[in-house]
Length: 630
Ligand SMILES: Nc1ncnc2c1ncn2[C@@H]1O[C@H](COP(=O)(O)OP(=O)(O)OP(=O)(O)O)[C@@H](O)[C@H]1O
Image (cartoon, rainbow, N blue to C red; front, side):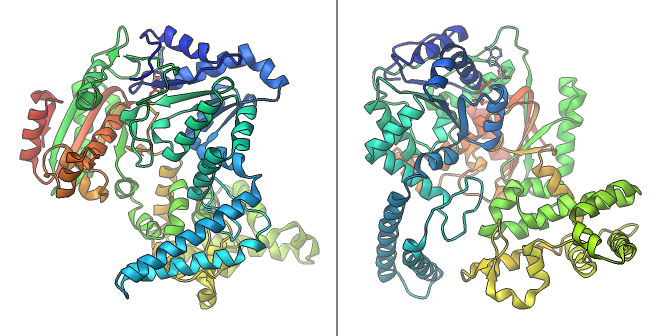
């Protein structure tokens, strides 16, 4: 690693090396890249504690803060919690950070957007001229030209650009996620004033999981660091082996300026010895970084179960695997407290039983983000109102029923009750509406979502969210399209029908699917995705590998384990030094395996069990007794 002027492998010295960088009179930048479970997050928090103690007063008096960019909102909350919400630290995701940086440059944003839109339109028109007419791609391009041209026309009418890091930004004055990243990177690169403002406000900037931070931004932060070496410290935390998104900077850390400090961490504090040996092997052909266990670490167990893809009852296989592991490890919690990691949300949806609902809404680009982060108003309506009301109804819990109805029902608004001469009649109406809704649940069956919204619409018990209301008043539907935040906006064309189609399909599902979805999304379920568990740890991990179910093309476990040969593109990419789906999958596998604190079971569904077995034996990541053919 270039620029390693300091190294050491005791944890104490790593933290001290970082502390030494944080002297505001002589700041240094550093790059703490180390394997899974080596305590990078812990070192980050230690550095913040150090800053609070040593520099807190100075920073506060001079109205400066320390910025910490995290990869997810969950990681952001975790760090904020660990530093007791001290306002000295500005902890946020990359999108919030860059918006904070650029939001006061409104006229520059307008000019940037004008140029960007013009260039995009020219490029699309050139592609349209070159390409075949009448194809789907040509239609998409034409629509895109129309959309961008419309945006260009209204550009000067926009008084203030807006952006929400967690929203879908579909109003006419909003910027989208990739635009704010692009704007911030370009402004940071080109505008000395913006660099100065950044450094003045945040003389110290830490970036966690920086291997997955958008490369153009990382590059612009490097430029700032070079221009402000004596007043700015950039601290990067991460692990190149855990880069799982394509927009991160490849080979981050290569050719660092010579004055950067690059501490080394070799101990893995999380995983048992056997898992450490496994992840060392997975990593061996990539960068030869090896880890050692902490003193007194347990051995732990690893098994890989090779199962034919053809097997119908996968749930049974996975229960059998749990029992096997419980017996092997003498740990009964394998049958009740296991984190199961799947590659895609679809796989959890199938296993938990909300697949039809998920599949229907996932099809729409507009609804997808809200579906994945649990914020779709159409679903929240069921989760926050209908399901709790149903539970209270089943339990004869009249207190809770009254609370929900009073809080949400338009029948019983204060104004309604005050104005009404017939309060008793209103209460009776609300009561009947609750009875009517409750009666939809028969002895053995549960209502569909459509039955529920029709019932509620008719009784007037609750106002439906705009999305659902539109469905039930389908007659006027063509004039509207849906947005996640507002429900209704001016028509933007074809996408409208896709959203309606998606909801049409979803409303045919039973409300039980919403219940299961709700458990999954609020993290009460035992499932997580391979990507989503970055940074987390669990005692018992079951990793499900199944390309067929995952449907993605970015990852291929069949290739990783020899059941599928490399495509021509893979061969070409490898020859030319570019990464392949094999490389990406190997990194994802590393991330997922390294979450285990005690024991790890891998269930590999495959079209060719024999080929997988041979390949596993050749690869030597697992001992032969650890490979279980099922
Ligand atoms: N010096 C230490 N002594 C004891 N335990 C430690 C030490 N450093 C970290 N740990 C523990 O090891 C586990 C992993 O630490 P942490 O999450 O900080 O690692 P990480 O490098 O950020 O991991 P990953 O890259 O896999 O997300 C945590 O449970 C943490 O509390």
